[in-house]
Length: 146
Length: 146
DNA sequence: CTTGAACCTATAGCTGCTGGAGACTTTACG
DNA sequence: CGTAAAGTCTCCAGCAGCTATAGGTTCAAG
Image (tube, helix red, strand yellow):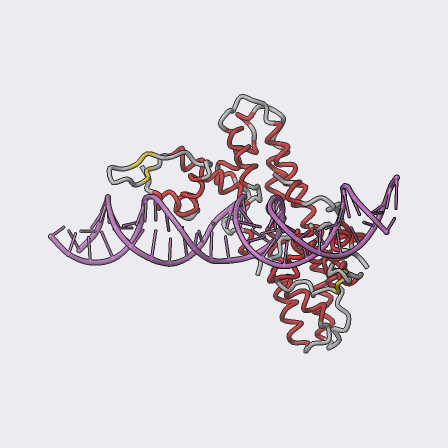
């Protein structure tokens, strides 16, 4: 049995975050010791590690809730999980494309700066021009994830 | 001249968000109509679109403030502009690297999810087991920026 | 048996918005 | 020109997802 501190250490999650996850219902209420301290088993550790990985991959808590409910019920088809992951992938790819454009522009500015001529900053242009966008972002990204 | 609603529509930003950006100093105070309504020109639209893209890319508002100061003042002492550009370039590169790792992981999850059941769904499995991670993602992405 | 680390609850704060209340301005229609 | 509805104004409260603080209790090492 793990105390909350050990659990957090094992999963790489801070203690208050674990309590927060419990509060919002992502983790079940654990057993308590005689002195009212939380005690966790392997299942809780697995679940917490799952949540952590998903958070790192950028899944919002709502999506994680969905994924957990899928994982809790392993005989159903995994199309739903696949769909969630695909949406996440599309979001990640769009970000990469635009970050590469921004990187190019920052590099250009730095190079020019070395020559003492940062007269024209096109940072705004690069990120500001819809025509340069790889993806349609007329709908908020957050809606596309979750 | 655009009213705040038109501006928001054009940039894909909600009206209260525009007022919020003004409040925290990311957008300058615009002209007002005789009846005290905000009126914006093309410059404000460019700036707002820039902010929106940068936000989508995950930059915190402080970093955006930095980038905007480059654009606002491209003739400032080269050393300052260079420092800002370099700092943001490092953040951008870290972000790209991180996102590429995430993309690889998501692709792996998805291609190995052969539309079976959740029981053998890689999406769920990969998220649950750190040992299956192809890449090191022990450092949260957000920490990589600024 | 004491001391100090780890735990408890409760609450407040953080970033970056988002939405509501209640009043005013603008615009479109008859 | 009048009126209605859509848009705008300010102010303030609340959300997601934590993070930190305060003030107290419990546990394990020496």
